Image (cartoon, rainbow, N blue to C red; front, top):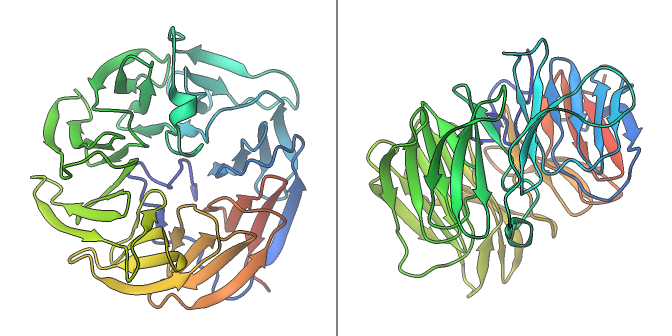
Length: 371
């Protein structure tokens, strides 16, 4: 199926779909839905098996073909979820977290009612997670290799846990050096980056450490990581770093301040076969940088609006959330192909079912090629 079941598309979080819809000319609107519970939040929607999932304000599923409502639950739904394929149940399980508990929900087919929980993890006695999170998508669950992987913080202990997607039971726990951002899972290995200076890799089946690095002398800010076949790429503060995937040996390190003194990388790197994309705020404004994965050198940079969200790449098009628009750029040159204006800042899109789907917190949009 032509799905987008996780934040960042795949379990590695690359936000790269090689065969995804690459809209080179300004698109048409297939359908638009006003969200039933408007809050202004704009988490990334998901696409799975002909259904679009939105958690902007409440839990909503719509038919991908025409945007008609399938399910609507008015309860808040935490961060953007992950879709677990049917195992113990007849249909998929939607897995999310509110920062204190992880839960699996039956999306159902009836139009109204409360969330139908299949399981919930025990509630911790205390948690600082909501005050620590830099963004709602930062600790969305990841489903891979038959596990749910999710960072967790009780205020006493920070960890990454592997849970059973059928009942939420804990299979293993890694006590991390500070709260982790969204994990990246690739080829049976879990890659983590924490608030405190740590990049580490764990065996996905057992949680055993394969390698662990602390490349900075000082504690900086939130760290992010994305793994791919050709390397592991991390960001922290104004640094981008690359490691050998198997050994953890550092391949390159770049400080991306440019000609100024201030810079802060915004969010997770987007990684394709040929390029690493990072969004950064510098003295001269907000920029999207395209880096060479082998050397870290800058291939091109493009000014973008005052909004910090991870870009998405489908085919040879980069979709970039701007302050009040979704931009489409040429992946090789950074040249702008088109701009779709919105009322508020849009989410990173999901690309699937022949559409590019996103929300600005007020409307849910489905774009397709113009005819």
